[in-house]
Length: 78
Picture 1 (cartoon, rainbow, N blue to C red):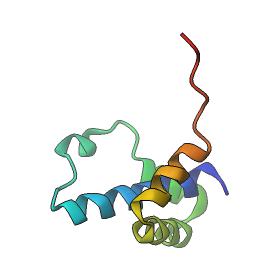
Picture 2 (tube, helix red, strand yellow; picture 1 turned 135 degrees about the vertical axis):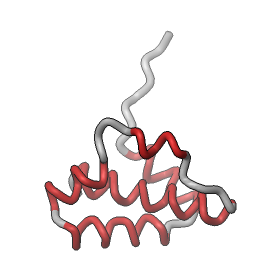
Picture 3 (cartoon, one colour; picture 1 turned 120 degrees about the horizontal axis):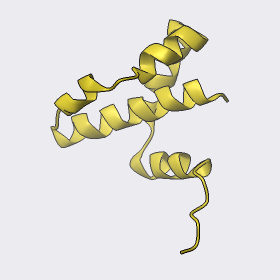
């Protein structure tokens, strides 16, 4: 899976967590210099992004954490 699908899936998961908590998307999210979903739509198309968003929204919280950490860079020892 590519990074654009990953971004959309994690975005969908974050939306689901916010909705379940009764929270709204932070207004600062609208101020992002780069629109991650717009970039993903340009790269892989609307259908693939919508599918990944739906998959992310359907993930349970434990699965989201495991998924987010799956490709996370290894921490540098300090």
